[in-house]
Each structure stands twice: as C-alpha cells, then as structure tokens.
Image (cartoon, rainbow, N blue to C red; front, top):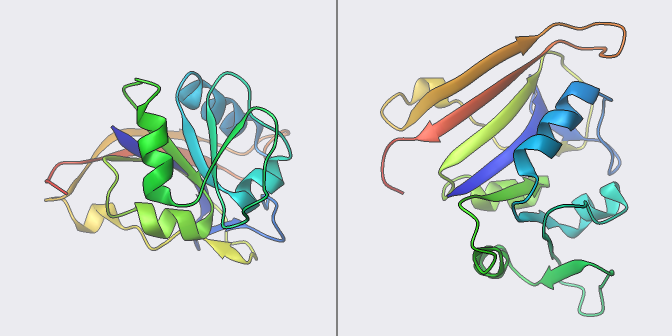
Length: 169
C-alpha cells in the first residue's frame, strides 16, 4: 500500500522557508506512530528540513544531486526509484512524506492519504496539491476523522483524516 502523510493548513500550506509553519506536538506523535517501522520517501528539501535521519524506519530521499549522501539514508533519483527501493523492505505500507513537488507526483498513484488538516490559514511557500476527496465519493472513502482542539501546546485546532482510494488507479 502506498500512502501520503501530510499536515496542511486550510489553504494547503505545508511549509515556509523549508520549515513547518507550526509546532503541533500531537501531530508529530501521530506522524511517528503511523510511520514507525515503515519506509518513508521524501524529497531532499524535506530531508534538509528534518535535519537528520528519522529513527525506526528506512529513510529514502529523492534528489538530483549526484553527490548527496548522509549516513543511514538511501538516496535515489526519482519517486519511482524510491518506491521500488521501499518495496524491498517488505512492509505492508510505504509513506510519501513530502514535500510539495513529491506530493504532486504521488497524489494520483497513492492508495491512502493521511492528512492532518490544520484549522488555520497561514502564509507559506510550499503547498499540498488541491485535494478534495469529499467531492469524489466514488473515488475516496473517509476512514478516520478525529478532531483535536487548540490548547496551551497547540496554537491551532486540527483534524486527523485518513482517506482511502476505493477505485482502481
């Protein structure tokens, strides 16, 4: 199964200046528990934002830079190559974790989208592609919808949603 996992504002912002535009600990925990033990595939800019290999899961980075490497990282030159490399780990699910360009390439081929909808309109320079699965009930089914209100640790309310594709790709 090929999945996207992303946090996006209501105006689809996912980043600004190579950083997340928010600090949401509950979303960070959700990301970790959802992806642990499963390969994650990301672009180089997303990896740069992380600043390190995420433990407990194979980290695969897509880049055009021939000399790019980092200890504990698998480097590939395309999304297709990244997916093929991820399949070699034998897990039931592979996660695409960003960024904007990688999400654009992957959205039409994934089986699931784990989207944390951050209930805010924020400024940014990196966006998740338009994704309105509720307008395509013949293609997408909502299988999780869990809201968390803002509090002293979270500046914004957010909703964890998981959408599963119900038609062939």
